[in-house]
Length: 433
Ligand SMILES: Cc1cc2nc3c(=O)[nH]c(=O)nc-3n(C[C@H](O)[C@H](O)[C@H](O)COP(=O)(O)OP(=O)(O)OC[C@H]3O[C@@H](n4cnc5c(N)ncnc54)[C@H](O)[C@@H]3O)c2cc1C
Image (tube, rainbow, N blue to C red; front, top):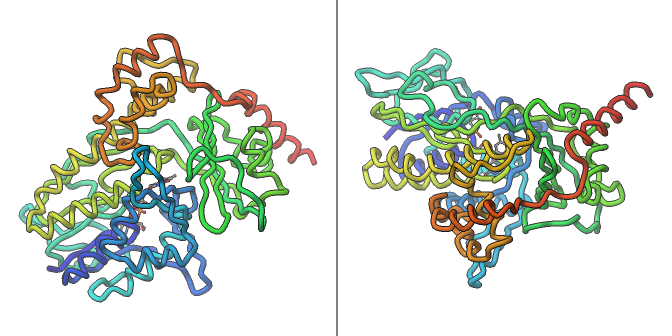
């Protein structure tokens, strides 16, 4: 069949290459032409391109199954497989320490070489629909016929917004990112870690995370309530914050590492779940279906899981199964993030855990520090082999911990108000010097 895909980000490329390998004729249309002759790739419209990404095992699984050369290309570009060992001694498939940019730079040329997949530069204005059936893409005014139209246009895509219901779950997370990439000096040891991917700390009113990538590169991320700590976008303020927060100061010590990029501010972040539009011949995939608060690193994994489920549906001639699959397996993750974000918004503005509602999953996990019976339930949830409802049986245990007055400890370091002061001083010193 002829497949027209809106977007050639990770979802469009992975699905497009896999469908082309199955003998379909696929065109993925994107206004982004890819890296230029000098290798620069501004990736306009994909604001997360240079923000830190954790790449979960699900992404490697789909790559190795559908496009193994892309997995090899990631490794050749320096991506480091992370092997976790579970409590029972088994090893799940590896995730990757790699920048999103490196991942996409590896994926794109491999996908572009797959016979049957054409990457076309253009903007999809809308989907051509007649009698309730999609039959093509309208690309810069010209209709490109297709038997199946796939919307892989990401969180910012608009081409199918007027088709089917809009998002049915989610909303503004109230959270914003500011990050910066650094590189360790040759032979310098990494700073502290809390797991093989990252170091993180919840402070009073904000969060900091260090994500390790390839070749000694790492990202420092400050997660803040949207509208707060805005001075972080200034280099002097970001540097001052790194100095002020224990742990970050180790990672970013000039004797250990040097900045690789300017400070990278991020826009407002949204959770959303959009059901399939119910238009014959049209399917959504990737961030077009759902987005989740990014600190948990789930977006590429949900994309990979969707690609697999959609391919299974297409292979079985049962495209209609994909919508119910997304409702059952993707929507719960969005609701999980909504609960967690509501909690952190409340706590960051001086409130407390709301024990009249289900305890958010990350708080259930934290309570395992007090009640060890919770811990065995966490592995499948964190690994996304089981959905958030897998924590329901231990939720009452966590609730009892919180009813007893325990709260997750806040890490040492400046409160948000104190950090704001540090930032103001740093920006003031820069202006007056
Ligand atoms: C700040 C941030 C941090 C994140 N961190 C992580 C992480 O740690 N781990 C993780 O797994 N995930 C993370 N994610 C999520 C991850 O980036 C996304 O899940 C992933 O990009 C989804 O891929 P996609 O192909 O669906 O969408 P995108 O990557 O957004 O690609 C969509 C493509 O569609 C194109 N397009 C849009 N409109 C049109 C149109 N009308 N016509 C033609 N083309 C169009 C765009 O140009 C773009 O190339 C993060 C997201 C954000 C915002």
